[in-house]
Length: 211
Image 1 (cartoon, one colour):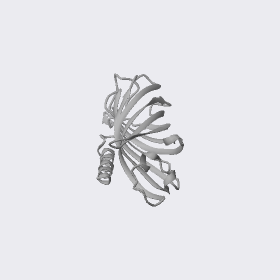
Image 2 (image 1 turned 30 degrees about the horizontal axis):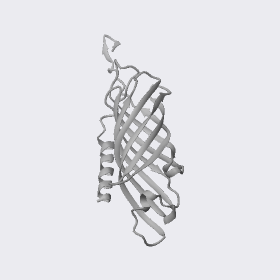
Image 3 (image 1 turned 135 degrees about the vertical axis):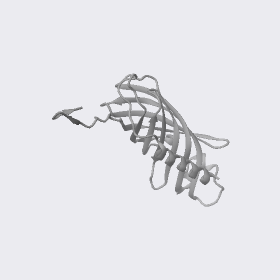
């Protein structure tokens, strides 16, 4: 069942990447604003259970209004010899202000969190250890869980299209009876696409060019 849920989430994420509306972008002001698409890469760190692991990922977003957008993102965490994890989530992005160059925001969403272990039982966090039947001291197992995502930060525009987005996100990984918080913090480098008007082709009239 858990693998089936993860497959469904991955399909939904892929669908978001394919079905996102045509690449168009927002302009500097609300009066001439247009719906747009944002692509971003992420690098940072995660701090589950008091430890610190590297984190990186990518996201795509659709700007529905000047303040409201929808994001789909994938984040990899850890990837060391003992453990690694991957989170896929879709959520809403709400800007608290629309005036550039700095736009604070909050976000919330949901998705799936996959944790993979190849380690001695003593190194597995209690959140997972409690779900392992007593036996071998070496754990080789994958866990798929539902996750709720909350976050916030600010988007700092370096130019009309390019922006840095420092962000803190908390993944609440859940089971029926337990919750594990995984803070993820770092910075996104994003590009806001924009549709440029097409200049009409010139025509000829009386030996001179008319536009």
